[in-house]
Image (cartoon, rainbow, N blue to C red; front, side, top):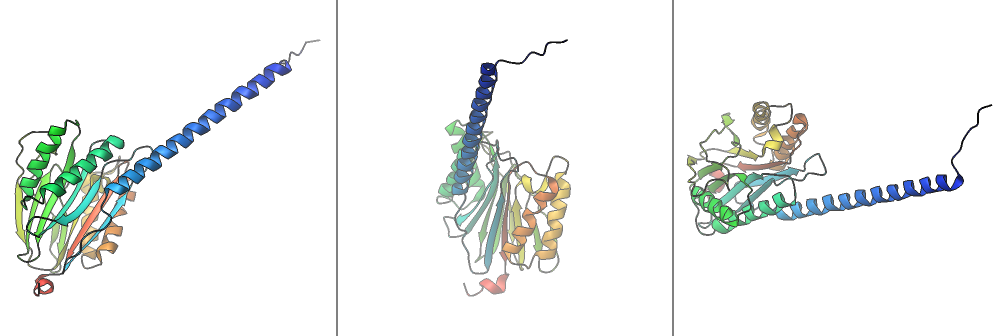
Length: 278
């Protein structure tokens, strides 16, 4: 007859105690990680503008979707503010990295752009000075950015890009496209960089859509396909309320399976007749 051996009672109790301690430690780590993520997301929300300016004949809306991986929160941002000459400044950008440092750097970029827009209304000057300021901080990070200046009186639109995606646009007469304007490198890489600008004059009603790459690019989804889908939505909804169009565009990120943050900034211009009294 074979002898069946069993663990002594004290060994079984010790095993249960050890397992209980490991479970408690795992739960504590989960709670700590959850608190970290919630704190990081709260910090990121605090860095975004609480409200956007509205001018006569100009309507603005924005949407933001965090990274699908709850452990990584990136540094995408958008902003709209008044510049030195009273014109409207519009900015969107994406910071390298997915952690608290990226969010802090995003705050520095956004603050620098706003502060410099109080000294000059030229987008290329704002980007060039912001680039040098960020390099002087020695953070070792970089950020892409698209900065627009729109004067509702003269209807002049000036665009300057620092390594960022082009904007998508459509007008009331049926014209539309992806604005492949020339640009420079991201902010925080090359000291003394001078960023090119593109000048336009808005002569009819239409819409401009600025976005980050999390909207249009994913692991198995090329950026060209994402931009084409956004262009289709903008063509179909150029005359919709900006909130409606922004909500539609941000959903493109669901098609891409994005692992990055996604931000959208929509600007609708009612046309010269709307701002004539101003």
